[in-house]
Image (tube, rainbow, N blue to C red; front, side, top):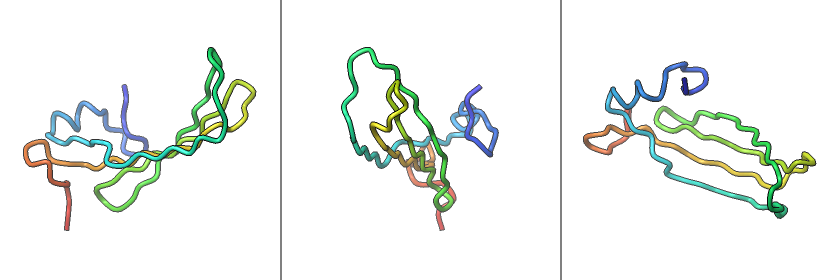
Length: 89
Protein backbone atom coordinates (compact mmCIF):
# COMPACT_ATOMS: atom_id res chain seq x y z
CA UNK A 1 0.00 0.00 0.00
CA UNK A 2 1.59 3.27 -1.09
CA UNK A 3 0.84 6.30 1.00
CA UNK A 4 2.32 9.62 1.92
CA UNK A 5 4.54 9.32 4.99
CA UNK A 6 3.16 10.89 8.13
CA UNK A 7 -0.34 11.01 6.67
CA UNK A 8 -0.75 7.26 6.21
CA UNK A 9 -3.44 7.59 3.58
CA UNK A 10 -3.11 5.42 0.48
CA UNK A 11 -2.60 7.32 -2.77
CA UNK A 12 -5.77 5.78 -4.20
CA UNK A 13 -7.84 7.48 -1.47
CA UNK A 14 -6.59 10.89 -2.64
CA UNK A 15 -7.56 9.97 -6.20
CA UNK A 16 -11.02 8.80 -5.09
CA UNK A 17 -11.47 12.10 -3.21
CA UNK A 18 -10.77 14.00 -6.44
CA UNK A 19 -7.31 15.17 -5.46
CA UNK A 20 -4.37 14.85 -7.84
CA UNK A 21 -0.77 15.76 -7.11
CA UNK A 22 1.15 16.46 -10.31
CA UNK A 23 4.87 17.18 -10.35
CA UNK A 24 5.22 20.96 -10.73
CA UNK A 25 8.99 21.23 -10.36
CA UNK A 26 11.90 18.85 -10.85
CA UNK A 27 15.61 19.45 -10.24
CA UNK A 28 18.63 17.20 -10.80
CA UNK A 29 22.24 17.77 -9.87
CA UNK A 30 24.36 15.10 -11.57
CA UNK A 31 27.71 14.76 -9.83
CA UNK A 32 29.08 11.61 -11.42
CA UNK A 33 28.24 9.18 -14.20
CA UNK A 34 26.41 5.94 -13.69
CA UNK A 35 27.95 2.91 -15.36
CA UNK A 36 25.70 0.50 -17.26
CA UNK A 37 24.38 -2.31 -15.02
CA UNK A 38 25.34 -0.49 -11.80
CA UNK A 39 22.90 -0.86 -8.96
CA UNK A 40 21.45 2.28 -7.43
CA UNK A 41 20.42 3.17 -3.92
CA UNK A 42 17.96 6.04 -3.59
CA UNK A 43 17.47 7.78 -0.26
CA UNK A 44 14.22 9.78 -0.22
CA UNK A 45 13.36 12.53 2.24
CA UNK A 46 9.88 14.02 2.37
CA UNK A 47 9.60 17.71 3.24
CA UNK A 48 6.36 19.62 3.52
CA UNK A 49 6.10 23.16 2.20
CA UNK A 50 2.96 25.13 2.98
CA UNK A 51 -0.41 23.41 2.74
CA UNK A 52 -0.54 22.51 -0.93
CA UNK A 53 2.98 21.34 -1.74
CA UNK A 54 4.96 18.24 -0.98
CA UNK A 55 8.70 18.15 -1.68
CA UNK A 56 10.65 14.93 -2.18
CA UNK A 57 14.45 15.17 -1.98
CA UNK A 58 16.62 12.35 -3.29
CA UNK A 59 20.23 11.29 -2.77
CA UNK A 60 21.25 8.73 -5.39
CA UNK A 61 24.23 6.46 -4.75
CA UNK A 62 26.07 4.01 -7.01
CA UNK A 63 26.88 0.45 -5.94
CA UNK A 64 30.01 1.70 -4.12
CA UNK A 65 27.68 4.02 -2.12
CA UNK A 66 29.24 7.10 -3.70
CA UNK A 67 26.82 10.01 -4.10
CA UNK A 68 26.27 10.44 -7.84
CA UNK A 69 23.23 12.69 -7.90
CA UNK A 70 20.96 14.87 -5.81
CA UNK A 71 17.44 15.56 -6.96
CA UNK A 72 14.15 17.03 -5.81
CA UNK A 73 10.56 17.00 -7.01
CA UNK A 74 7.72 19.23 -5.88
CA UNK A 75 4.13 18.03 -6.06
CA UNK A 76 1.09 20.27 -5.73
CA UNK A 77 -2.23 19.01 -4.45
CA UNK A 78 -4.91 20.05 -6.96
CA UNK A 79 -8.62 19.41 -7.38
CA UNK A 80 -9.31 16.98 -10.19
CA UNK A 81 -12.21 18.98 -11.67
CA UNK A 82 -10.66 22.45 -11.60
CA UNK A 83 -6.90 21.80 -11.48
CA UNK A 84 -6.73 24.53 -8.81
CA UNK A 85 -4.73 23.98 -5.67
CA UNK A 86 -6.46 22.47 -2.68
CA UNK A 87 -6.70 24.42 0.57
CA UNK A 88 -5.45 27.64 -0.99
CA UNK A 89 -5.94 30.87 0.97
